[in-house]
Image (cartoon, rainbow, N blue to C red):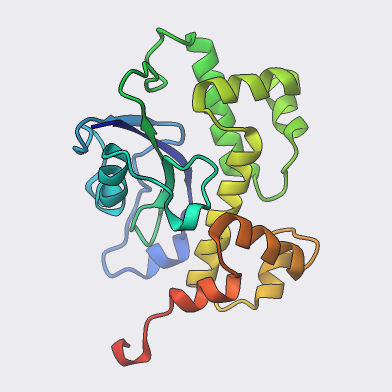
Length: 229
């Protein structure tokens, strides 16, 4: 079976919902942006929280078997998936990636392939994406914040993750859009405006590319049937 690399890429916290819970939650999840685990033989990695594992287990098992092309192939890497944990108050988004058996690609704390400084910069990059993906979608912003050229940042991110900077930004944006479509009653046009798209048509085109369906279809697919409410 293939090994599966699991990367925590973004967290969303809903303090208003946490405050309304019968037993108020006083802290956010202990998982950190940039943290990674390796699943071997489709087993839960040590240190990965049960809530996150229950959300991704089916996908990890499929990737471990060499299966992919989830969600009608909307992931650029067919042997990958993007999953949010089922914590309704502080969900984390995780990037899952099937690894070749002969691959020596490992988690960031392994320094056999990358220096400690490079891994620290990569983690800082993930945190910047988490904080600024809504208002900053240009490579130059992240390179400037990290004090490096756009060429160096692009190469570093690609070497470590196999993905581009744009992939991280677009995926974070798509996950945020999906969360808002599920949890809010905002009109799609207002949601497009809040997510800084030029218009609803541009947002719809982006969402179809990332999720394989229109925002309206996605919202309808996640609604709880009235008979169950």
